[in-house]
Length: 446
Ligand code: UD1
Image 1 (cartoon, rainbow, N blue to C red):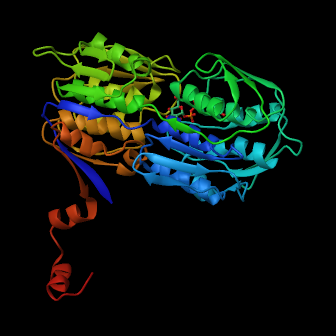
Image 2: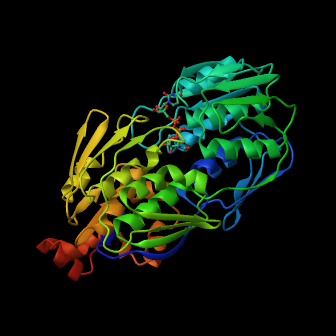
Image 3: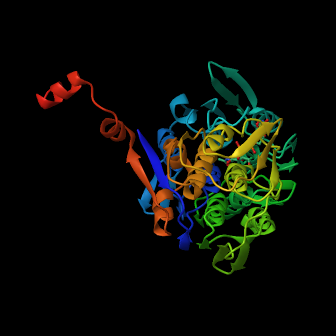
């Protein structure tokens, strides 16, 4: 087991280059099942465990898919051999479920295990299934699998989403690309990941318009072909580094950040007193000397609202702001599991219904803490960068799902942060029992 150790108090300064967007990559990789001919080549793909899991799933389906060089992934879906996605690969990540519609469009049937993912609240797939049924599929759930059948292919239909789900929007849009006739998705998610997925599908030959608005219209086509596509920078990684600059009173240039994608977060940072300057290549985030950050309220909601994935990192920042902030969550009901951990570091924070109330304190102190999901763990690392003394953060397996070279990038701009082996730490820190010492002295392995 590994964990991250930080010693807080260093001001971060310098340039950080972002990796490609995790969420866009995952939606796009699921859609790469669709093209009947030609290879798809994606560039700016982060080497993170979620991407590796989806590539393994594609290979399981008989679709050669792998990194050919750093950042470049090649996929050839011309002759898939299976329409069944096993639990072992789906349980690790909810986004894998989105191969269901594309497999259905290719094979006329598909069998995909019900998903897992970060534990941040109920994460049903009812919109996905209802949408596929609107497109003419019959779905049954048994033994932990969804079996979907559409022997005569999918046909265009009107789909209304009760909530603008990102996953359901990209999934149903992809499935509808090969449906017979016109599909309209109303109350669609407007996230940049939806736009990226529509853009690559259109390059594959699909006819999709309206992505990035509440209504997406898909005119089904007979066939799709492989293409090349560059993935935009990760807006949540950008937001995380922006908060890293803010929480350490630092000055970071975040290269490749896309203004329209990152603004829902940087606007709130600016309101708190952080200086934010965009140019053509990225954004500079700086805390002017002598400025104490002020508490601001946020409400996490679908794009273009404040992204729920940035809610835990922003809460970490607010623990050190002047005044009281109210952080409201409207997307997931259980996204406050980091509160107890921040409290252990001296934060004055409590949960009330779907909000966290944070009274800023003058300082945090390092402590052993445990991350419970990807963004909660990132929030604890950020708190650790500002806390006095050492913070040991467990839950690195979550961080590795979504951040490429997180601690390496942070170290390069001055953070005191390292990844250590947990077992080694225990062995060196805890006194050995006499038997164990004797056995070791005698060369016997315990
Ligand atoms: C995606 C992102 C995730 C982000 C989330 C919201 C990926 C890989 N992950 O997750 O980082 O936090 O968007 O911005 O892109 N819901 C239902 N039924 C459904 C589908 C969703 O009730 O069938 C609900 C969920 O429980 C949740 C809300 O809709 O409360 C939003 O979920 P959704 O947008 O689907 O999140 P994901 O696409 O899974």
